[in-house]
Image (cartoon, rainbow, N blue to C red; front, top):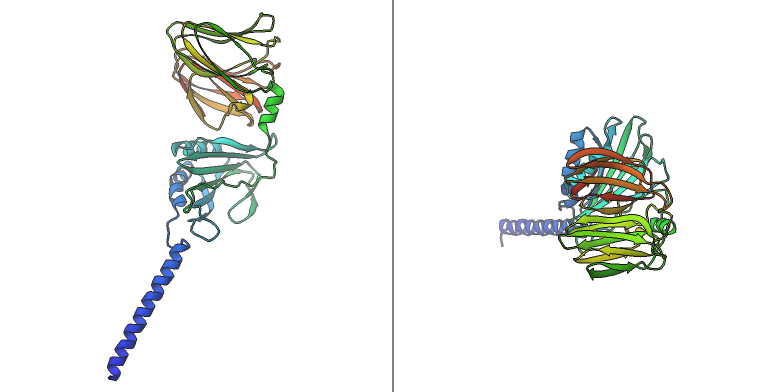
Length: 366
């Protein structure tokens, strides 16, 4: 075999070896996500564009495509800062809502604290938001820092389902404040009992469960005539509550025993000629009122947040009212009241409290 021929064989052999090595390196890199797109970063872009468009600046960012040996969930985190003239909480919650996230208060620090935490899910994605007001201590991508006294900062973490299991792992939010147990407070203030469901046709009575001095009522009614629910005490005397008083079909969530009239309700009186259903449950089971809420008809929420201004819209034809109750015996706080189609504003004070929405149409709270 000639020297030239042996040289050609050696060159081809080396080329094949280099090619195989390259394939091995590429395969290994792909297994660790070195050449994979971080879908969380891609999904985050509309949020980033919205915040940048509002005047906020991206301070730092971090992310992981989720192909490493210690992490299988794609995630992306970014910190934005904005001048005090920009309401970062409002901007980020509106941006999140446009991407399908309905945020709820995740953990509220002590009253007056400068950190607010929210979380929401959409299409099995989890978005966690930490808003730091002026001068608040926070954790940036690179470590601990302090927000400027003239600016606010917001940290957003978007996590996608695991690449291997398809399940979304919980996002861990750092906080020096212990997580409260809201249910205990509501049970102590408003009482607790075993939830029950009752159905009927026409006028009837519903005995309240033992311990149910106040609670939630999830109600449906079908019919064209008048539909009323009121309460009486153990002696049959009215407690003075008009829990529901309407005409026609009804579907909603309302409350009884708040605020207390001084009489302890014992029985509900249902006045109708149509079919109905009532589920009675403790007020601790009410849904939390998040940063944004929307619905139709009557609803009841728990509110555990700080003093808050509300942007309100309603399409109903009659009264739209928001009430806040902090204690069964405390005076009723009317946060907002108006009639017909409108767009307005109101406010609620620091929780914990019960927030009752009365409406006969669609509404939104921001």
